[in-house]
Length: 491
Image 1: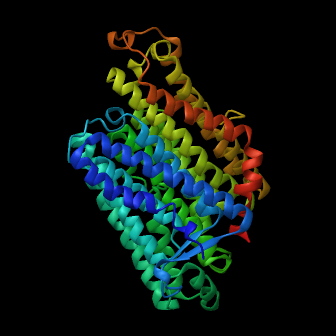
Image 2: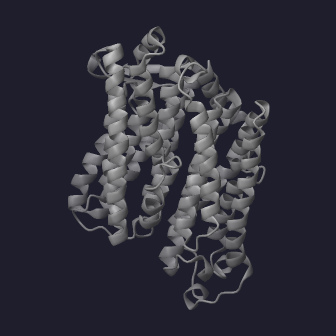
Image 3: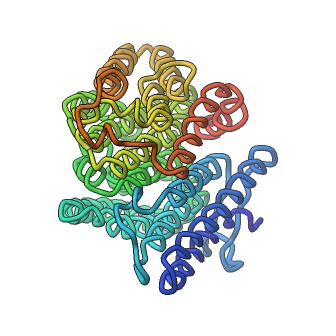
């Protein structure tokens, strides 16, 4: 047992409480608390990642009560990897200027950063929990914080938040009902303990029903097509910083929980040929999402709505990787979780910088921005080209592994869809590049625009550099981190 398994969570949890108190005194102090808390969480997550990749998984029994009676936190390569992504994106968002990230200037008593830290606390808890019910608690914590943050987007944001609340409640209810069925069948909620019991009752209708409920609930949380209907409005009407958190890490909590529960709890006895066709469903719905999201993204004139539909497609890639369920496919899926986090957060934060400087969201009005904001738009271009899959940028490698996995199992339809979707991604980003880099300014506000503040440029530059470095050092990342994660999942 080691306390390092819970350390990434504690700074965020205590920081959320302290941020409320600090905000009563000074709004800037609350942001300072958020920066310190997320930086501490990132340091703990990276330290834990280094440890578990060399020494193996560690656990922590909350309150000294051992599982299956007590609640267990688990830090292994997968959870440490995901925790590091959550903390990194959270740190960059809270560093970002508050007016550009959240479209407001909070005064005293406005618990903005407390909500952000509560969202990150919930996400971190999902990654570290070794107990199915405890995971549900953290799913609800981040969902409640998200509802409040999305509503900051004005009247449309409030409506999007309410609709997300309705769908989120359904997803949570389905997941909890499935967990209840599993508890009645196994007498435990601890994941490791349950994984040892489930093979003995393989084929149980109750367990199969529980699996269907849990997968459906988590697919809704993940916004996997066709359960994505809450996502476009929630992302496009929320402030840029909130959209960056939602697209980069919040929807990945559902993907992480799917991987963890399908491969570590149910295992081949339920996901193989004798169980429910969950893998096939995730594969085909993922492919449908890739096509649907990419196609609708080409038809959008609003930058944030374009990025929102693009997220639907990118989540489809992760669903495809989980559905193929081979080692190479899982490498592609897990790698795309990281790649999409840095790419999409960079794109949304650039959108925030554009809105802050010009107030523009319509793509046809972006003409000439590249000459007025060259550094920021270069960061945008790197993230966009990575989304297309241009080598050696990060986005190329996750698509490469997914295509490799599809060809390896003879599924040429999947390979063709992934390549075709990259062409659609190129289409909608070429339209943006033409406006930004080729055409002359047509709007006075663009002609007078300058680079955003240093914190905007710094944040975007860190994400752009991360995209390049992840791509260049992809082999090292796969060999030492992502590969062992896939090996452990497929056994």
